[in-house]
Amino acid sequence: MPNFQLAGKRVVLAVTGSIAAYKAIGLLRLLTQSGATVHVVMTESATQFVAPLTFEVLSGLPVTCDLFSGHQDMKHLSLTKQADLLLVAPCTSNTLARLALGLADDVLGTMALTVQCPLMICPAMDGEMWSHPTVQAHAETLRNRGAIMIEPEIGELASGQWGQGRLAHEDTILTAVEAVLHPQRDWQGERVLISAGPTQEPIDPVRFFSNGSSGKMGYALAEAAIYRGAEVVLVSGPTKLMCPQGVMRVPVITADEMLQALTARFNWATTLIMAAAVGDFRPKLVLSQKLKKEQWTDEMLLLERTPDILLRLSAQRTHQRMIGFAAETENLIEHGKAKLKSKQLDMVVVNQVGGDHSAFGNDFNEVILLTPNVAPHPISRMPKRQLADILLDHIMTLPLPSSAVQTVSSPTS
Ligand code: CTP
Image (cartoon, rainbow, N blue to C red; front, side, top):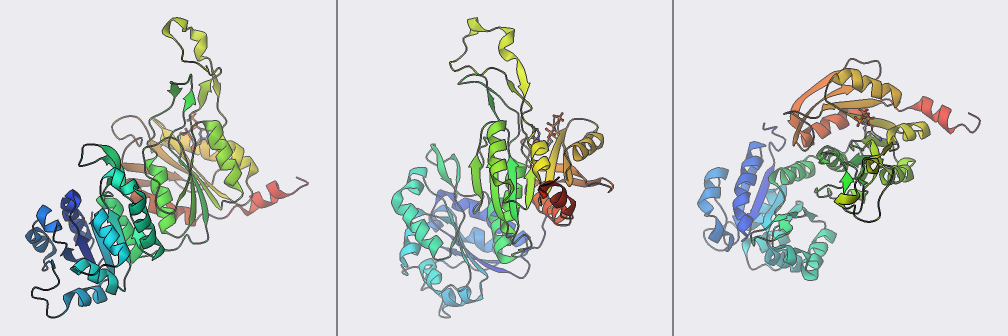
């Protein structure tokens, strides 16, 4: 649903000659739906992939392709003077190098040198090219000059190979654009510790216990918090997700490792958001060699409890807001309230798992917020990234636990 966040904003969308140029069409639609006026600029090679007419029709504005034809008004200069953002998407390795070196023999190169607004670059290329030291050096040069680099994603590439090089998802780019053009820095000064994803408990070197959590909710929260000005540490179980720019990720596997990583940073944090789906059980015995079928006995799967991380941290709490999640299949409010009380939390975000609308792995979620002495607050189904911002709005209003400061930090208590 359009939110008109970009109403009144002028974006110059520069499309370069990558196979991902067709994705710029979807991006243009999102930007205009969000209310932006978008002027498209294309390099010559981009026009080999998509006809300028496509962008012209969708943007409702002429497309600028070269420096010389019909632009006596020095359009490349006036465009960048009026623009609120110069967005290069997709950006090839060639354009990345040209921008880093300041070459100005085409319209984009010239614009980039006269730009007074932020420059956002969304690279798209083969994985080996992206990881090449030369390309990385150019990206670093541009970052150091203040460009915002939206890292390419990992996935299947045009070559058929797997790697990091796919243009970032259009929603990711739109969110970054909205964050740059509407910086809502209300979380500045906050230090947010977030856990995300599943944990894995090994049975032997090749098998493990785990669950179906994708980590998407925790990662969405991390991205929302960093965009809103917080410092963010993301303690993450195994996931396939990219770490949001600016977030410090601490990878962990088991519940014990997650406990250690969170405990080490708990004093630093002003808010803990425990979005991870921590496994509750682990094998009593972890085998050092792969278990053969013939060796199997029922005793091999004797289980023991993993530590309840939230419970332990809430016993050590001094100044932190503490938010837990509750993954439930039934009696959502009843079970959520029990967790709010037993883990002494400031808020529990209850979501349904299992069934058609399971929160696990889904890009969407609907939740119920539970806070002490307040009626349950349901939030309807929406993308997790959008929900993340709403959760941060609510968390911001939670009172700081001053009573916890006295009871826990006092040496005599
Ligand atoms: N949690 C935790 N440590 C665990 C298990 C859960 O810190 N060993 C946290 C989760 O990250 C979540 C909250 O506790 O924020 C509730 O987790 P959930 O899996 O819903 O409930 P459990 O406490 O594990 O209880 P149950 O499985 O019996 O519902």
